[in-house]
Length: 238
Image 1: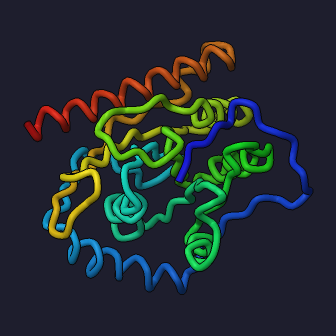
Image 2: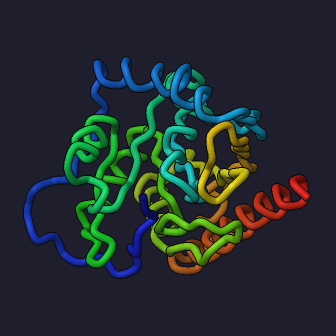
């Protein structure tokens, strides 16, 4: 899953709009299966920290670190339908939307981006979701990373956020940094995992700057927030 390289989006090669839909019947199967059987069956303990920052309403971008294929399920465990009554739309790489996995992802609110040539349609769709008050997940590091250090974030998330607010100034958009801290880089059966939500970044706070400067400052602050969460996790585990 990816935050993607959205700094220089290409023109769309097709007029087909990007879509992301959540299948009610499939979510009624997947979410309880994941919450009550798969996740507690695999992990020894799932700890959630920063629950006071859980976004129950309003437009929000979830900005998690991306360490394993368990990430999306764990985010749904911490912030999904059983907690907030909401399903997140998730930006994923084109490679992940292939085959049977892609079939499921398309019906669970995911939409794809080609990280080699991101399209304007993807950006427009992301902004439309936020304008509709949806919850959007973008992995800002861009790709799955196995170590416990924060890698440089892509610029796209901050640009989508600031553009969404500039087009709709009344939008109360928040970005929630999230750190997923696993006991091992490749989680083992009965491992422990911690999901920590950080203090939300209020995108409106950056509208006092020019669009370019505001996006840059937001990008820097998100980087610092994630870095702080990761350092706190490292300190706690040692």
